[in-house]
Length: 470
Image (tube, rainbow, N blue to C red; front, side, top):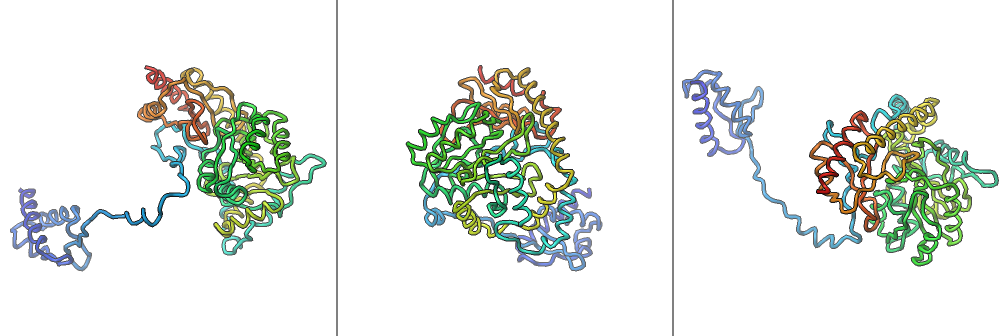
């Protein structure tokens, strides 16, 4: 009976509200009790129902009022089409690697290491100290904190052989992540409409940065040993390009590390053509069975523009990277960065410097090497057992990813959908090609969460591949 009374009061009040102005005050609870011959509990229940429906709102100590309802109407943004015109360059869609997925999914798609692979204790302590320092309140120099510039220069200089001049701290420009560095390098050193040679396959973010900069990407095939120097020389000659973007160590997505001597051969080509090599050393901290030696360590004439990131190895929340360039190239990059962001947060720079100069940093890197190796080996073993159709041409010596070729004719869209419906998230390989894909590939990240689920994830991928062939 109380439910019927409550519904009767709700219906009555809705009629009253329909003719009342927004903001009108409802009769008091005592008045409603008397009017409807109902209990205070029944009246309160009716008011709660109307509140839940968004019809009224209660203001403690004042009363209950008719809620002002704004009528929703479709927005018209058509005027922006005329104002913006066509984009100067078509931009690729957002990468699947940046997707957020359910916690219970088996995630092979992400490009970032799991939290347990990060130096969490060092990061938290560094941020606390940085927050208490002058860095929390002062503006840093445009090129970066001098101490952090020195650290980046010293690290590269430690690999420089005798007879080659190591970089100076003044050659370093600190960046808010390597992605912004790629955009500045492509804009400042190539320029809109100009050709840019790029390894294929390659990092999707570099393809995006090139599109944003409006440069014309020319793919250069890269195999298990790196790009063919003769093919690279021919591409320079045919296009007139003056920039070649590459990842000599643990390339994303393939995991390839250039063969011994390939860096020198590529450097000879670049020097002969009066060009630049943009070396993206994104995985410098992720060596497993080898240690990376940057090509930049063998160049002191300004032909190599070296990009080094700390974001993935320190913390995604500390987006700090650096570009090391010599001569006018460095000045042009710095000018572009100044126009874009003026300077990089001193707080984040101080925290990054604190982490990498702690004794625990090297201890963490040694532990990280072993953790990555066990994860990589587990995923390789799982894929070979449960998904042999996915051919792993090369087990990477470092980095975070496996690159697998699928049978010809594989429907990648169907495969990714089938895997996702079974709780496994994979990344289709097409987004790592600057032009048409050279086949059907998937990239599997072995640094994500829950490595214990790798065998089950591989089994689901194998089953989805079997259905795909049917």
